[in-house]
Length: 109
Length: 124
Image 1 (cartoon, rainbow over the protein chains, first blue to last red):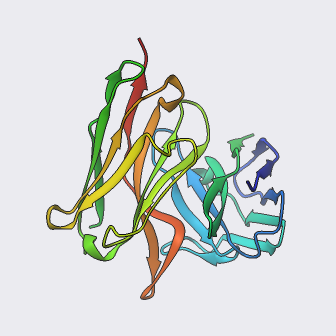
Image 2 (image 1 turned 180 degrees about the vertical axis):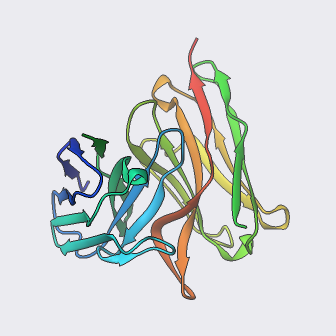
């Protein structure tokens, strides 16, 4: 089973600052990595897929990078609505295995 | 507007059964692969099950294999999850989620959009 480890667990920043979130896989997942945002009481929302592609309607301040085992989600300039929990996820279609990281909470400093 | 609405959650005793439903609207449901993903209270996300657009291909996480059954009724635009032999560790919010599609391509294993979730509590 592929394990995804996210860091840091909590990130405290102010609006306007740059956020850098990390996700490390226990073995290579190539570029098969996605990022989701979840706000309290809401369902997750897909932000980035295939490591670096923004999903439909996602603002350009969100960007993803990396391949293999090390990945990064960058938010270039934080807006108030960006404070949330972020999850990374990998997909392996055969055998089917879809696993999530434990999440990074992005909180207002 | 694309909408997924789950129902059927509630309190059930260990060893009991529950059937979740997910009603889809605003898109051609029969063309989309679907999934169930769960989230234990205060915890992270766990993929549970996948079903192809026709229903002919089905996958389960090891944690639910043999106990849960996913199905769909394309005529009713509905997705289901039959949960048997429930355990305390199955307590979670259960989300239905479509496979993400964009620009005419669909990407199995990426999930979007999601429903609002339904809470299943397994407790005596």
